[in-house]
Image (cartoon, rainbow, N blue to C red; front, side, top):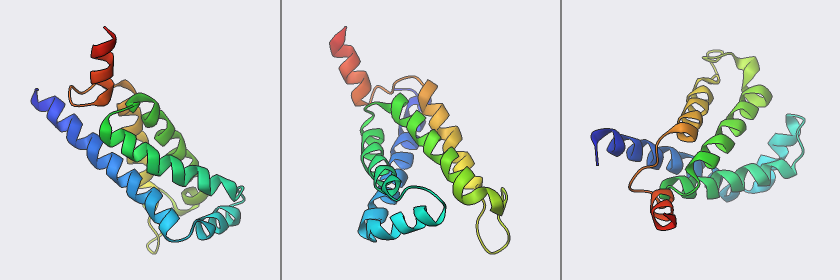
Length: 133
């Protein structure tokens, strides 16, 4: 493997863990709390369960390198949704009290990266594609 492939693997695992953890926390803290927050933003409360599940399962899939391109796209969409529903009014770097949407912008960029990046040799995507040849 090249250095680029090792670094891509590292980024994929770290981002996957971050999303997994965020999904886990939403369930651990009581999905009802997250649902209430979503309602306060004018969203359907059931969307909280969907987002938490996507973060949890998608994070694991990203760590494993399975469906990386699709997961990257879904994560980018979720982060765009977070920017426009919860963070936009705070500004890019926040208001001094609350963080802005700078981290969400980074996650959007990473999601786009995963959509177009080459498959890592250390991913289930690559293993399955090699078996299909």
